[in-house]
Image 1: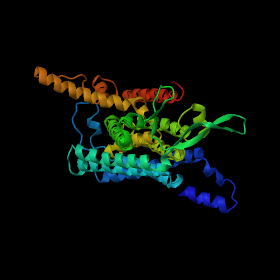
Image 2: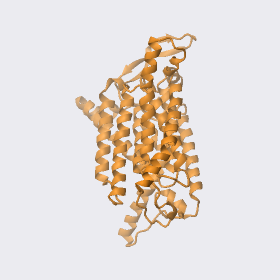
Image 3: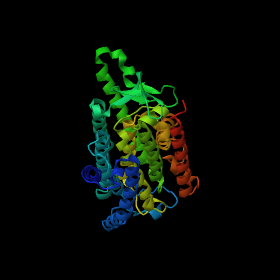
Image 4: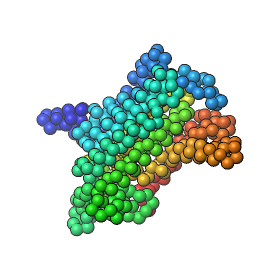
Length: 407
């Protein structure tokens, strides 16, 4: 909204300096600052309100060190995160941009799913929260919306290089011309000419190719949103763990969004050029700012937990954002922490069931899952586990950025 106001003033009045709002880098920096201030300023008030209402999650007795001290800690702090993402985005981004519309709706839908889950746990005293069936239905509906808009709306088309024409720039550098395409192309990391068209997998269907391509794409969107949002939810088991990991992933996605939406940088790096996607940098900047600011209250010892309201939203945003910038196939590397947390639970449950069926006694691979609890039971301090996971997330982020040129 502020963006449109300053654009109007810049076009109709001679006021020096207003043109700076046209720069993505300036608005992104401003989004981080506003997001941080919104969280810090209003965070204490929201925490006080939650404490007065005695909104705290029903804790389980898992036998973990320091567990008793966390009993009664306020939860549903994800509301703070959502608000601090939405306010800077609405103020600074072009809200008519289709990518921004998708991200705003995704944030609200994911936040609602997480909020309902927390509400049932806290107020209905049901430890299971919202049933898995309803969670999946909500995520399926969101995935269908994202896939439909992304697949059928022309404003989400990308530009690919055309060798027919050569443009001579002012610096006498030869840049390849770009032409729009409605092909649903994504990026395969570590592969030369790493552009992949989903339609290639459905060519065998002949005249029904478009329908099957859309169906395939929708399935991929569902898998991405469900796996990443649930991965973030599982990771949110130690003070500051999920928040810090999401901030690192957010910065990386911001880098991808910036270079992909800049024709010169996209040409230099030989990656997909995505016009109109530059506004996504504003959104992800607000996302990163909210995560960093939330650490103010969520770092050890936590004054508040984000709850499913925050974790499902943060994870789901990563999934949707990666799809929009055509980096969804890079998520197993970039979100390696989430992948490990998910796999630890799957392996533990599967092995327990298998050994119980075969030997009559269920056996475990880990002391406890998700895997961060395994390290807790080994006697490693919570803070050390969190910092080490952050370091791993940072290494994975660097490797993900390296894929821009490593093929």
